[in-house]
Length: 455
Image (tube, rainbow, N blue to C red; front, side, top):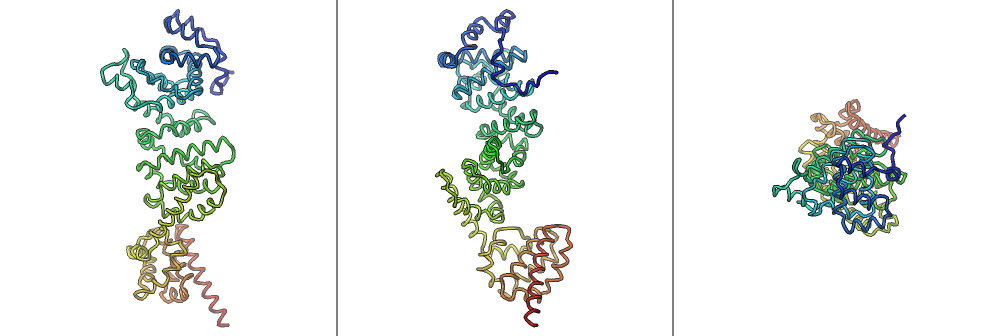
């Protein structure tokens, strides 16, 4: 039974002996390439580091040419492991791939091709290496400049960074949808995305791939260290995307906000809390996010977080900024005039004022204006609206009026609201029935209390 090559480790692969001389005999590598490989292969790390410092571009040229011309799986794995080892020891070596001396070499094409071919070891290493190389480029790269000047290799035009981003984002999105590996596809994809999404073109391509919704299920409280890193990198991706308007539209129509708040409530890792708080700050004044944050009781969550002993000064500053932003948001969204306009338009939503106790306490007497005009319109909405959200909010607001106004129950009963609300207890929408029940309970509580006093 063949072994699962997807479970190979780099150490295992690098213990192999590759017949470089045979490849030279068959003209798959040059004599110069063979000399370079003999000098480098199986040598101590410090010695290899010196060779790369002295002539790194030549080694990059040899490695890329092998991946381009040799298709034997064991050799491809070996060279990928060599490159991964080289870059893991010093990530700045990724810049070697962009050296002017390599301007006639298509450094990207072999890795892009290998993303979709071979076993998981080959795919994972190709993804990691390609992400590091393209992230280290200064656009336009030497390769693109050379191509634009008419220089290209003999086979085809040199692959551009835009083509790399497109190929990588497509592969990474596929790994999130249909993982090639049961446990490593998703962490590999998220780790690469956390680096790539800093680029505007990568963000655009990721949104086009409908990738934002693929991140949302991964925003969930966790316990083990590996999952914490995955959660952090996922939240980092969302934070980067929160600077990009088309991505914000996707976040607004998903369950990203309640998930982010659940994570920040349950996490003790400062880096996770910090990146989520920074994301919430970015989203606070976008669309209806501010209103949703109030509805999800984020002000209290922030208060609880501020009571913890954080050592990260940036996190403490971010919490203060979020707290002030939420206060400003409540103030802006909680005026009675704004509420009145919402009611008169006949379309209600869960804006912050509805569940803000300060709003009801400070504005309850305003409902008495013009012979309870706003209250009468609220009750009329129960008969005229077909929108479940509007009906649910209306029932909730009536229950708030009953609770907060000294004569609330009597007034609402006099305006014949009880029968209309009771009809909604059989509504097909659970949000409507829940709030209709709340309203009726408060009405009946008043009736029972009144009859008790009469006895």
